[in-house]
Length: 455
Image (cartoon, rainbow, N blue to C red; front, side):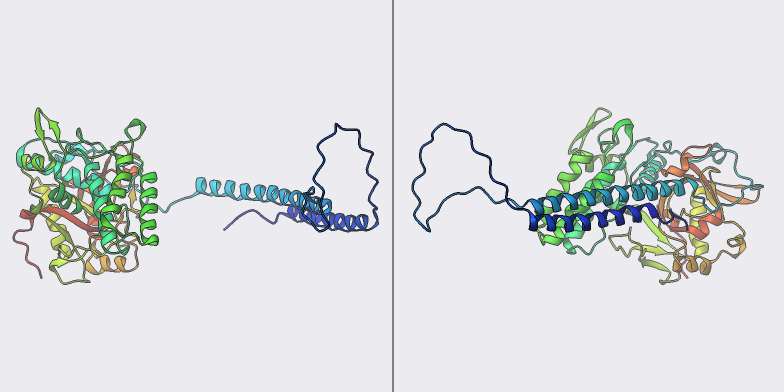
């Protein structure tokens, strides 16, 4: 740990200023005691003015306000001393700020040496099913929407052959409304997180329908980039005020939430045109032949019984839904792998803060010096859940699978900033070992779970 050393100049200047102030006060006190009031100079003749009414003894009259020169001088001296202190504090504050910037520039992260790690040559090597090119989320915590929206675009293509670009921000808008509603229903005890889970998207589709991106883009800032920092700040401030003031009227509060969302994201459409036809959001969902009830979210943990009715116990599962299917690790990974091999895609949620995940390299594996691949089992996952080295960081879309040079690899479409650092912008190659150890949940068509026996 390092920082600026002692600032001796500050001590010297402050000490000198204090001594000067003491000397000034002593001199001022002596001068006040010894000084006699000087005779007032003779006043020049002035034009006669109306005489003031006579004042009776003990009566009322106006006089000029009294002045206190010594106190004025004392205040001026105090202000001068404070200016000196403020100036010195500013110098020290700047030094610490500059040091923090330098520390940030010098920061290093523990990474794996990728020498000798053979990876697939390109995304094209996977022969992945249809998916739109990767889209960046920029300064938003909405990876869950970007990944699951991409997943449903692939599902529409798989089931109908249609290539329809859906709106990520439509889902984000209504998810904000739903989070606020639960916050109000629970009197402030529901988390106000920016994130969510992949199964939020079919839940929103079921309630509100869906729209294409051409009908609602969520008002990105200049250049088509998203920045939800100001939106999130104002929304949190408003809902905290609701809690602190006790104004729990749901209708009024929800209208306030929507006013904030409308200003930053735009009002969602009630009707729109798409390919020459008029739709509302629910009729558009029907036209896509997409049934939100056909999708199942899965986890793998020893903490709960295997089978349906489990809880993904993380803050982003703010709905606290107990409808996850809890699978043993071997089944968990097998469903993901076999779904990709069969031409399906899978929406993943998991940890992305590992030394074996590298955006520049465009790949993620578990280093042998962390845990050898053959030792990854249910207990190894659980150990990392317990010590918080596996956390619910990010949502991604797995779009392909291949075995390359004896290692399982998944092609992952990613909206995160790190996926733009490597050669294949918006893609990662995930090793099978990484998926087994660090994936918390996935969303898949329910057909892919047929025949899975819970143990």
